[in-house]
Image (cartoon, rainbow, N blue to C red):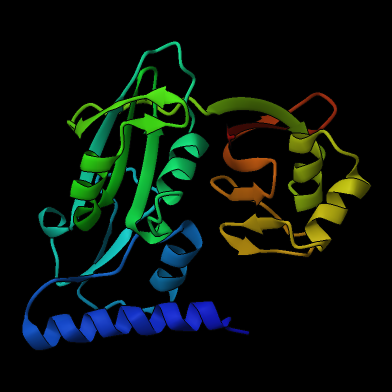
Length: 243
């Protein structure tokens, strides 16, 4: 069943495509989350003249551009610099920006580093932010335009080496959360788990290399590699945790 939100999203995407074709100019959506961009990729015609881009090649939050090249996307990269001893995280920047009344779909990826964070935003809000923001929480920051050829490596990640009894979803959730299989199943059945950005309630759903699993209040996990089996026949895996 298609949700009202997904239907509205698809309608907006078709509007952008039709307007671009009619006027022969690029048209764009706001920044999309992972579920939204995946949904549009699956439901828009393959023949449509569209491109997904978020300001750099490995972006997670993407705009849809109709009749557009990368250079025409209305995306600005802003750089926040501050004393390295302050441990500012993704949530600190997102909270501070949305507290200003900034819509979430005007904010793209937030890449935090040591003393430097780059935030991708819609062009339209960049002048407002550069004029208004001099603090993130209680931390003073300097704000300018970023050099996107040198982006911070996200610090809020860790690699986990896990041994799983199987690639069932409940086994995976139990391993990454350190919960019992029963409690992990409860998270799944209560709709707190998404697989590749779609809510899944089937505990026996099978995962594969490259699958993204997001667990509410625990974070996002990507099954990056299958590394054979142990002597006891269990699966050795590498998992990237985005906290």
